[in-house]
Length: 113
Image 1 (cartoon, rainbow, N blue to C red):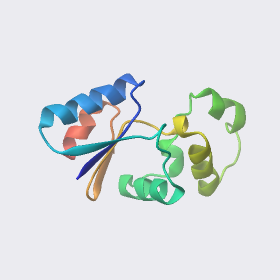
Image 2: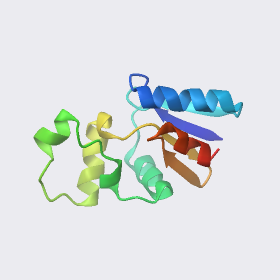
Image 3: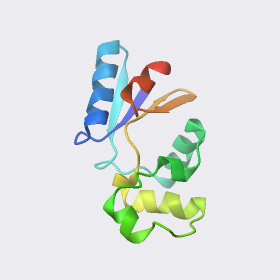
Image 4: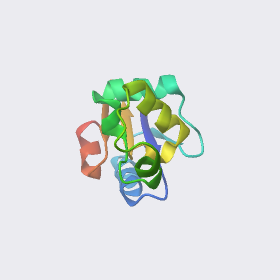
C-alpha cells in the first residue's frame, strides 16, 4: 500500500496527492499535522528514505530559525523537534513498500509508484 504523508495547505503536497490520484493506484493519506507521527514511525520513514534526520527538516520554518538553527543537534534531538513541531517535516512524503520519496519536486513521487 502506498502512503502519502500530506499537508493540504502545501501546494507541493497537493500536487503529490494529484499525481497519486492520477496514477489510479490505491493509497492512503495521512494528514500528519492532524494525526501526529510517532517517533518510531518517523525513524522508520527516515530509514526508508535513506537520509539523515536533518535532511527531512524544513529549515525555513520560523520555529526552526528561532529554536534550533545554529545549534549542534544530534539526530535524536532533530527527530524530537520534528515530533514536537510536525510542520518542520518536509512534504510530501510517499512510502511505497521499501521505497520512499520526498515530493520536492512532486514528480519524484513517480519514481516509486
